[in-house]
Image (cartoon, one colour):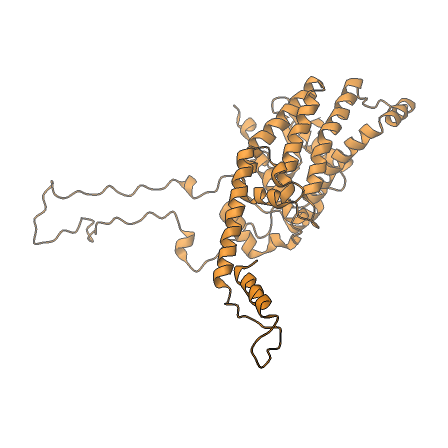
Length: 381
């Protein structure tokens, strides 16, 4: 392979493109999935971003000003971690092993340790990460902002910068400006395209009529492609519903996880019975496989199982695995029993209270009833 083929893609434009054919020099836009030829330079790719996705600023530098700053620490050992440990055998000024003068050393009794192995230079130099790894890390970083609502200035905080460098020294944090003008707009464009595809299916007939009236050579979806789009929207709608349900902030959602997971699997199986096209069938199989692999033991999650069992809407009915349901029921009974016993032993002794006036003779019509009330209180009834 030539050195040119091995050359890594260092241009910031590759944050938004993925090479799909290195031989023919074809790249695919990560935002709109359009394939473009980039030949010997990436000018064509840059023009695509500028024309089709103008809200993305390509002029922002890709590295954070803190990413190249050396981390200072009061402990020198924390910085120089690759220095070889000295030999345990003391060495004299002449470089020979120190041996007590009262004993004569023989070749059979003294073993000279081998010299410490010198570390290779590659162990001191951080390896560069690929564009794929960089995109993945950038995507995870963005979740700090649109999931946790962290301030953009976090990428300039020294503690956060040091944490990222410790986890992956090769990853350079994007600047605050790069996040707000490049990465977030790109993520917005991707989400917008997904929403547009959904609405496109809903407006199929108006779109067809409009394209027929426009005197331009526009790409036209075939009837089979329209059918696939409709089926995909039908398949993904239950997943959207579950996502919205479990993302609620004003109500508890833990008790619904097991039930909704079972529901998703059941919906996918019902859709399979409708004998969809081969493309849709493969997607359904992929989704079912993912649900099975990721959530096969979800009913044995003690936290989620307890939430489901204690929810008056579900109780035992929320489980498909009877063993898991019986197990969590037994566990909850044990917890309640233990708690009641603790409270019973820690409860102060109840003294009998009288709610009547005792006459001079010492008798009262309320005496027997008062004793019965005191007995009930002691038993915790």
